[in-house]
Length: 287
Image 1: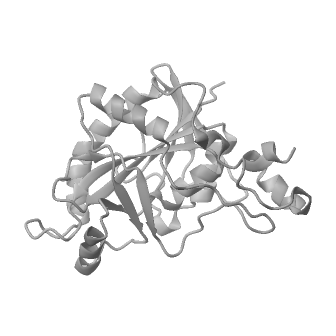
Image 2: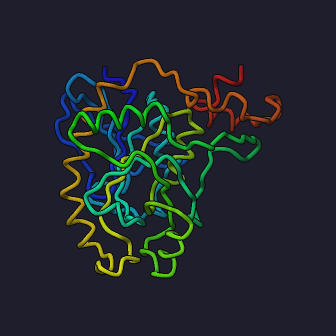
Image 3: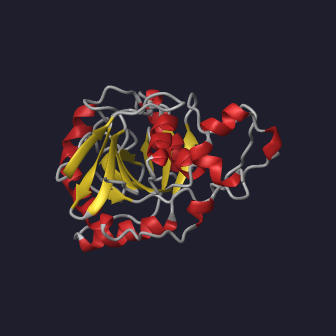
């Protein structure tokens, strides 16, 4: 039976992944509802993996409609320990252009209507999110990219906006002044929930446009996004394939114990139904 520890979450332009052998399709539900899509498990070369399409097969789910709690919870219950998140982004920097790949190390949450925690309803936890991306996993992805003949930007701040509209010119220029590097609509609350679930997380951001701030480039539209995205997806797949065999079986990073000192509610006061719901996430801390 295939029991993967590594998951790939595919974004715009990547709602399936080729080369999976021994493929199984898992349909599941969670206490938070259904994930965005069925989860595909199998092997790429000799590595067991899971794949989930963030927007659903055929891209039917808006960024604001993505049930990130269900997605991360489902992956956690499967035993996933590391997530490679593939996302299309716009560039807010002159030197980051379409076809570039960025490995962000910071996030800024500009969303408005999304649930970004598993906690509440009788349990309080404050997880450390100072470094949102797993340093160990990002290092492996960067080294794998170099091995694949790609030199990505190895740092940057990703601002996640609510969408689904692209930015106004005023907003785009403000984000540049604030020092953000790339802009997208999906990686939060995904990264926050992965940290609460003690799953390592790394974004592979595919630059498709200059948002709308650049005077020498046309306004961003979906045709432009897909033109560059389709060219860049193959590069992302090469990086992923190189990465999979390099992720160690045993993690040494802090992600694996992110909740160790985060839960502050007295265990005796946590409602039984909450304990049951969150058992895959907090069970090891309940004694």
